[in-house]
Image 1: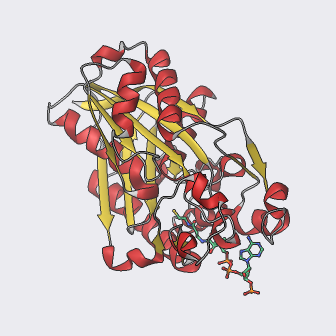
Image 2 (image 1 turned 180 degrees about the vertical axis):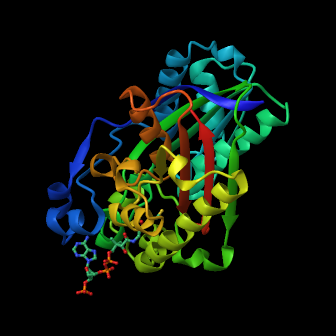
Image 3 (image 1 turned 90 degrees about the horizontal axis):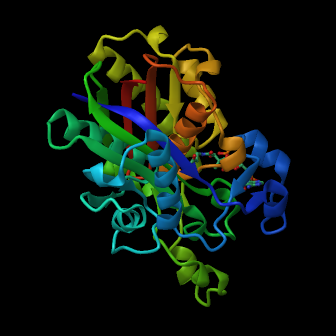
Length: 323
Ligand code: COA
């Protein structure tokens, strides 16, 4: 048995922050941000929480799938920016959608979180441990970034995406996942609540708590490791590169995605992107993009989709599945 996607959903806050809005907070400009990243805007929470956004995305996925929430066996929620450590956001979602038979837990692999959770769900289903899994990526990155650091605050946004997997006969799902803790220092973060970053830090200690990143090191890591893991999954599955219909990659930076396409010698048209609108929503980028592709009519039964995530840890993962 494999987990077939039978519903997708997403939620992004209505509140939008453009590059010009950011230029009023830090020394930056629209041209620099677009040229270096491809990002034009980001949606930022305005009262919403991570679990609220996750619950809204889950409701839409459920509605599309026609599945009764009580049929869900497990809720896997990938996040690194939930406002609460416990109850975990997955349990909050369980409550919101009435999935009373489901077990739920959060999983943190930063921006790779959704692909890691998707792979775990597939493993649960193929082992016969469960039939119906709700996989969510949800982030309030605006609570994590240092809004005085122009090197990082321009990159991130908030949102959530959800996918419902149902056990069915079908082509096997192929996957790979890796971590390199020794390089973890390239991208670190501790969550702080909004009320903290609105206060002026007196001794710099609050600032210390936000995201710290060596942008160029992360860029080089992504451009090297993403093609490698895609090739690893292709080889393991005996699939040719040209058989893949879409490469649904973590939406961190347009230049990273373009560099991956060049390294794989593959048409950039097979790499859908929406980061111009949402920026990097960490674990939520892949399911938000999948939902947009699904609802936009881009996805047809039998198409082969390669998804890949990368981020803090350092972590990276990929999954090849049939729509
Ligand atoms: N606006 C204007 N100038 C900026 C800026 C901003 N928002 N941020 C940095 N700069 C400046 C720097 O201070 C530097 O100025 P200097 O030359 O006078 O010292 C110059 O622009 C170049 O900075 P640099 O950090 O070398 O730029 P870059 O080309 O590496 O781009 C990133 C920076 C962050 C866009 C790029 O490294 C990146 O995208 N890395 C990957 C990050 C990522 O995706 N992380 C999440 C992964 S999950």
